[in-house]
Image (cartoon, rainbow, N blue to C red; front, top):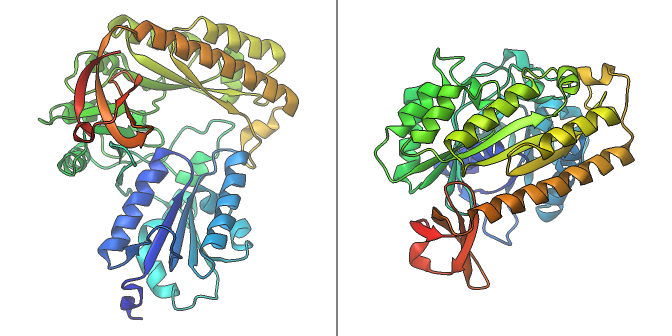
Length: 423
């Protein structure tokens, strides 16, 4: 059929979940605009609506269903396309939602224009297309700028770590990436478009290079050699893949910031074993100590999960004590939720929902104390802030290299510029 049917059609996008999803949504929207479609204006009803979903927890699934229904209500005449992790894992459930026109899996979303071209004229019919995750081998690059000044550069996709609680490998497939040279070129393009800060994003970025016989260390060395007014942040990286040479390199690099985000999940070795994680808490502590020894002002965020199958009260208290004594800056606390098809369901001990909440509240309280302590330690010190575009009560804000959020009177000429400040 004639693909000109899409010429001039308006598109609205909605994204749930991780920064990788945001980067991919941005890529999809840019590719559609390049084909002659237009981004819908605020307040208008779109011709086509794309919802890029997440499925990391049961709560995420519920939020996806809510977002889909909200988009259908807001754009009642639109052709509704649902893609992303939830679409890959639960296509049947999504097609049962009244108003959904098309469901595309992990592979198919990158051929969005072609599927739209073939199906848009058949507006009333539903179609669901997914590829078995084991058959997905392609890698598709992506980069996005958020509503501030930060760019998110996709450097890797997929995961070979089948942790007992996680469905992501079933939604994203095996680890894969572009080459160091291609990824470096993508970073240069972002810099040319105005990027001052680039966050390296992916599902398991420490596994970069598995499909190209390179390493994540090779990548960060290449990026650091770009001659530009730019800084980089490393997003979440597995502690066993955060090598000493990476830590040492960041400590003396020209462009990488002293900011780390490490998924611990549990501070109890018995629970880590149940989770099928690939490290011990002793290794995790060693990484934290090395970071703080070389970069005393480094910000360290830590992911931790509470209430997983097999986490007895004793095991949780073990985690709480470990985290209390760890020199970290903030906790990102996740409450475990049962996921169909995961090995964790075979673990007999189930933590009651009320106890999961209690444990989550305790760790959130600890996180608040950790963050306040870290911020207090930075008062009077100097840092380099990148001012962001958002304006609130005649104030603007930004982050220093070690992720301290600061505010100052709004100054339009300073937006997306670095400035040395005293905190």
